[in-house]
Image (cartoon, rainbow, N blue to C red; front, side, top):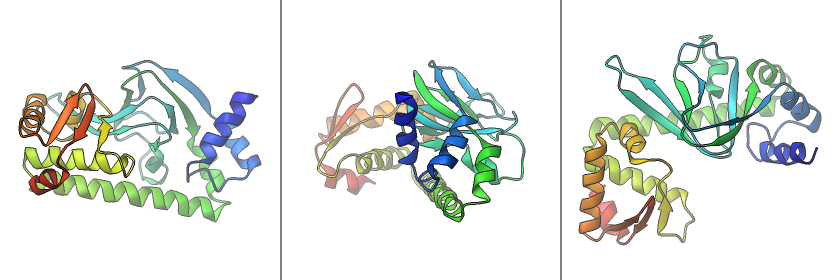
Length: 227
């Protein structure tokens, strides 16, 4: 019961669930599953029926597709207190258009799409919350297309680092890379070796330092000039 109340509060902190009253949130959670998954465990595969969307409580999940030659293209890595696959509710397709897989031990809710849609039809605030979420995702994708189309590999990496810095506390000059370099490189459509070389160059030029996944920005103005 205590765990239920804790998850109740965690879900309510997200704008897709905040408009729900207690009865509606209980209904949604009653038709959902609490999952604990290990690294590499799939949540769904491209082409499978899109019957649910997900909320990450802890851990991380990658969203990806396989190219015709078998290469993995990572679109996004979803962290704690984020949702994914919610756009499928409004798409004119019954199946997932990408695959999802845990990149580490994770805990998440598998939420019923049909239940949420039923609640959506009776709650206008919930409708606008979903539209807002999808607009943010669209803006992110447009920025990624611009980066991949117009910027070279160094610019892609620098923009990625600046974006991660923006997500950190405003007074901080450091952050943790959210995933392994292979996943970051795939997300940026570059080779892992290229990503490593660019990071090494930034370190050699004393623009950043790195220890494990922790990046410290030593000279943000110079980093921004590169971008």
